[in-house]
Image (cartoon, rainbow, N blue to C red; front, side, top):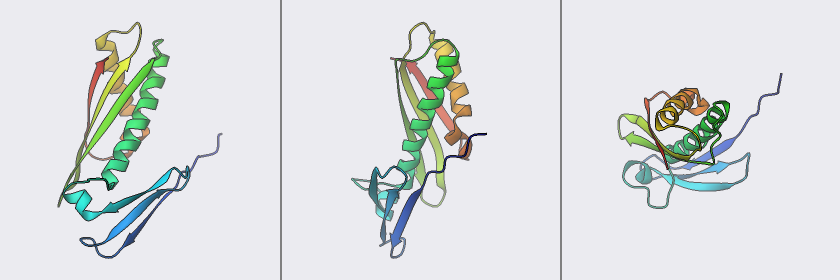
Amino acid sequence: MPRPIVNKATAVWNGDLLSGNGTATLDTSGAGSFAANWKARSEESGGTTTPEELIAAAHATCFCMQFSHELAENGTPPTQLTASAEVTFQVGAGITGIHLDVTGQVDGISAEDFARIAESAKGNCPVSQALKPEVTLSAALA
């Protein structure tokens, strides 16, 4: 049995919620540290990241990986997939939804099969499975 792969990120927060600030660091990859604060999360990001933006990045990436795998299993490997994830945060309610949008360049597939396999990938994506809000999807060929 393969050993589990563990990835790590660290967050440091200074001060209280409303006036404090922090950083999120991608420890495993060392790809960077990102500033975060409540204003970015509750009003407008403007150059500062939020947990929701980090979730969106993880979800879009994981979904593309799962979708490319399922397309290849269908005998129609993609040339390119471009996915975005929109994570909606409502003050007082938390994360209320996630919407995935994907376009793809895939030879030899119908729009119906592309959408069907996209739905399957949405359900089988490990990040989709880890998240509680309803995950919606738009799928279109480029």
